[in-house]
Image 1 (cartoon, one colour):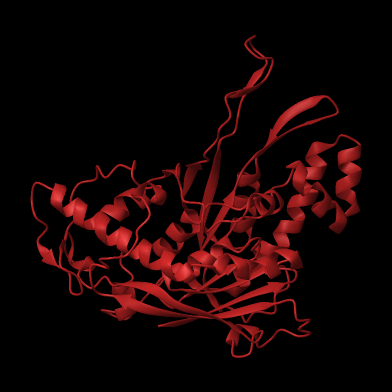
Image 2 (cartoon, one colour):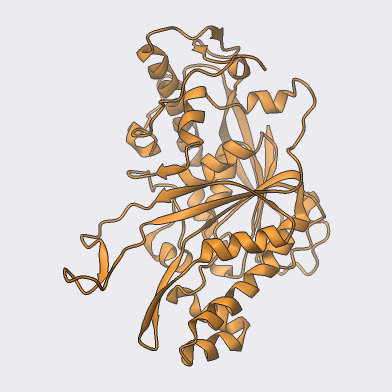
Length: 389
């Protein structure tokens, strides 16, 4: 299997991508009213700086979101019918002119997505790892003027139109299945990635500029809401974590960012991705074997490509792929998604990734500790599902 990946320097509100050309959007925008993003918003609209200077937080909040609104309209345009958009966003707290308040970014973004015609679906909340000893802001231990610290973010999920349809028995869809116990973890609305392996994530300096999320977050979303060979779009690509996740998951991708330095630095994050990919596949296979071994009753269906049983008929053709090679491609040389883009200035990056199926136990692979998946503490309390297709 071969996938294409393109990172572009440019404005995601005007991508030039063909209509309805991407299957999934996974992104995290700059958060309005978080100080690290003030200059970005103010550069694009002087009204933002004026509102902040005058202490009018509500006006600044709305002016910032109006810039994001143009991107959400573009997301709706390029998303294919039945496609899903997942937006990771956190709320903000801010003191302006001596007044402290919370700014509900997740509510404002969800309203904008809905006004674009996208249908809201159940969202998830994920708790960010933190080393903070203080769980409050304000007047310390004296009531009533202390405030809780925000340690969670939202993953908003919306869909374009009705549910996506596939031909009966579609091979790509059935190979892309996840294990039953993974479904029980992933489709809970409360997530935690404590202990997530950061090796494939950005360095500390880049995270300060991009607010990168752990790779496990987009990796989970891509597996939940797309199939092998789909194209994933990230309009705020930053350090390229969604692109990395798409590569690991066997999906193509296209990403946009205004920061040329971040786009140029992405290639450095590909070091060792082949070994990391096979390790991730091996980890999933080993985790399922452990799940089967711990069950009181052996699952009643045999996997087609592996030496273990599975719980449901839908899992029988599950097939995991690992990255075998990544090569740098001429910018958009053979990318259908690049056909409408003009004025290539050499800042873009394009990659071709080859994926090979892993149909064995992947024994002999140096697999990192299982704690790196962030899944070890998740609950699988759901009852057995029906085993019909």
